[in-house]
Image (cartoon, rainbow, N blue to C red; front, top):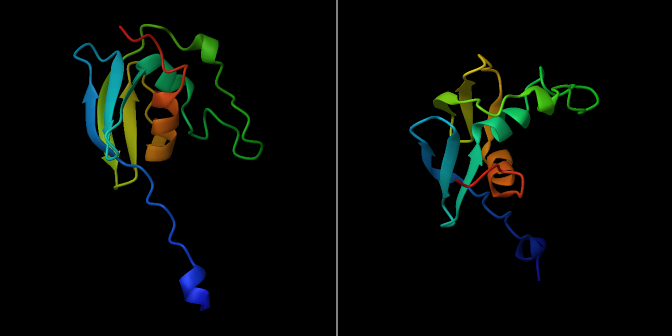
Length: 117
């Protein structure tokens, strides 16, 4: 058996295929290429923002106080970032977070994804 026979290709990461924002902007719903459907509230997405203003670049410690993100926060706009992420405009004016598909999957499939109604 050669070296090349032992190499296993990396699994293709899961990718979002359907992005929907509820009519009131309170929830993001995602469909995935593996058939899963997940969702999260705008508040939870904002609380998990990965940008340098919300997470210290050196320590990876969250600097955003999640308790200060209002429950009535809304998603005003969603934009694709290449083929690997989404960016949001939130009703509090925050626009700098880039959410890769893996992070979105973790946020929207987690137990803290927000109310389901």
